[in-house]
Image 1 (cartoon, rainbow, N blue to C red):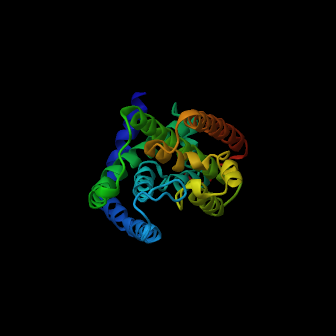
Image 2: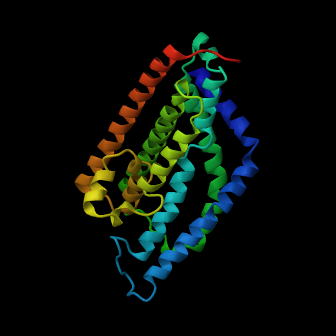
Image 3: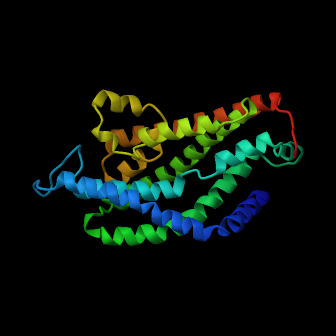
Length: 268
């Protein structure tokens, strides 16, 4: 365990070199968020206070997008998938075959350290933005709801990493994984609820999307926080999220094992 804590600490130190970049990235990332909020305010304009559209009041809709921004900052994979693919392509993984260190755990530590630094930097501009939108920011109904939402966010981050890790492991079989990374990102952007709440989809399509892992990256933890997902749906969703984490973990281990059979060290 000590060696992985050391890796986490080194990851923090390396990532802090780019702290100003993270701050500006988070700040300018609020520009499309502002445009989205203005759009929804225009949609609700002229309607009675408390009007519900797609299951959301104006305050809940604004809170949804603010929380999506926060959860995305906490859980999103930055350069990890590209770095993993580069390690395989350049032969850097060879050193992990000779040392008592698990590569998946090593990368998970680096992912956690990167998210810790980026989240700290992102909270500054995002918090200022939330203050200006405080009249429309919904707080959780109780401590239990907040605790479940935080647990779901942590699980979302783990699932996010495992999905990116598996896509990056395709580098064992193909020379360039960039196409697969972009395809995966496109599915994630739409099906995770980043673009719009999945509640507004037709019921049949929504049920189909909820069978995939993507809603449990953003839509589900945010829905838990807002109280949109509760009761049986809440516990079923927690089970689905945990199940996808287990499946992704097993898939990652299987791909690593199969990939090593075809791996040829080049460079490094």
